[in-house]
Image (tube, rainbow, N blue to C red):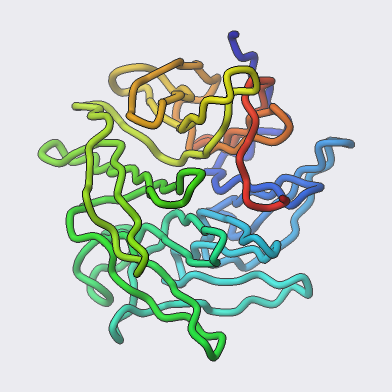
Length: 293
């Protein structure tokens, strides 16, 4: 089945990211303009729902419907409340400022794993490395951060499998002598990651930005659905479907040059881009989201 993409909003001209579903509307971030927008799939109305977002990038809901954001400009993971207020979840690791949180995955236990990247923001303060970090909720309701990887030079999108015992990570370092890979890590009971496997090597090409989990509505196979490709080399901007072992099942070219992220709602895939799109296409896939459940 080929996918026909339509742009459902006027092109914003600056990067859109972090698409996530609140049960009624699709939320997405507009990083350069410091805001989070919502798109109503019933009446096609787009509205600004949060402003002054600290250049929020990745967005995600926990199982209780609380919205969390990677505020790269403020070096923190933040919770966005219904009254418009925001709470800092974590902004340090071992007493040192984190760098620029990029994307996040949240499991049913409420543990938040996020990619933190050195070099995306002033490197003179903060951690001197890039890593996957987790925020674990403590008995008093606060969160404590833990470094989970030592082998990711530029982590990007990340995603739990359906059983939440595997974390998929996009290692997407565009420097010539670094890797662009889809990786998997075993998630241990204590929250640590181990047993890294390279599922797909993109060679000199762009690799993955963001990704989502989906199930084929007919075969019931579970797939990793990823925003990949660019105009510089390799396949153009596209959505690539991988099986759990990293084998490419399908590619679907997008009208944008650099798709940034995606999510699937009611068999429709929504895609954001560097150029400022919110694209939609009908698919044969079902999104696997922990909220709404």
